[in-house]
Image (cartoon, rainbow, N blue to C red; front, side):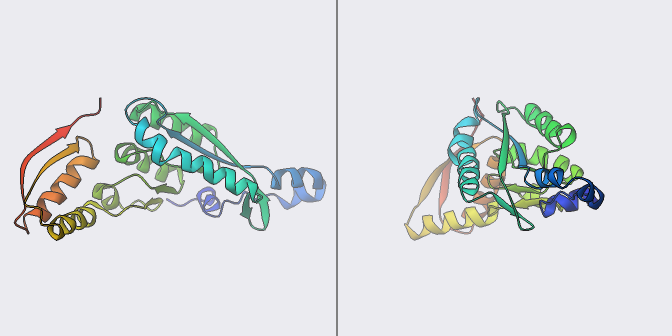
Length: 216
């Protein structure tokens, strides 16, 4: 459900009362120049850390650094610096969700950045939607997430059918006759395996074995 508070986050603007402006202009200036507080939880330890620390958190840090060097975010004509508030979710879904509940509920950060991986994003998306926080997902690949039709959730990846279809096209182009399949036993893995299997059935390529691997 859209609320005035969530609509404000969509434009990254925090309203300042006109009465306060009339009474204390220096206070308004300080409020306008306050940083945009952006919170997130991501794996810095545990089995998810390899992916998170290669493909995701470094990009958060680089973006904030480069944006701040350019003067910060342009919020309705006012430049405001980015303040990242990041926590280690320890590769635990429960820790991840608890952290975001704090960030959105009690800390009331201005915006959030997503966790790493399909499982964590799947768990967080309904909560972010309930709090009215837009959520961009660059490392979540699951048709189930799309089918939830959450208005504040935005997937940035192609879905399993498109990705596995492209993979099979490449295999056919290279005259591959048979393959063995390893996939992660989480939300991401089985969906991709099902899409890959479906695409392979339209070709002469056969798979000799398939094995699901659990996180260490």
